Length: 51
Image (cartoon, rainbow, N blue to C red):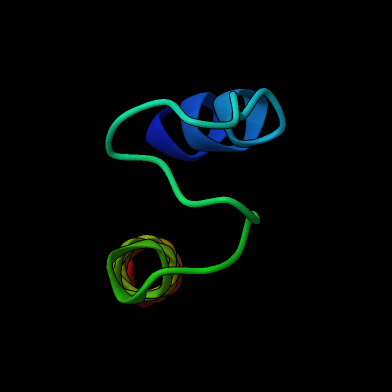
């Protein structure tokens, strides 16, 4: 849900808006969120397969 929100709103950047960069790109926090989501999915799959 967080990723969907970030992806949907990252394409609507307004130039000159405070707190926004001029060109869209990946931030460290975005990469960390994606890695944590992947880890959570991997842990869930592992737990399901273990029974």
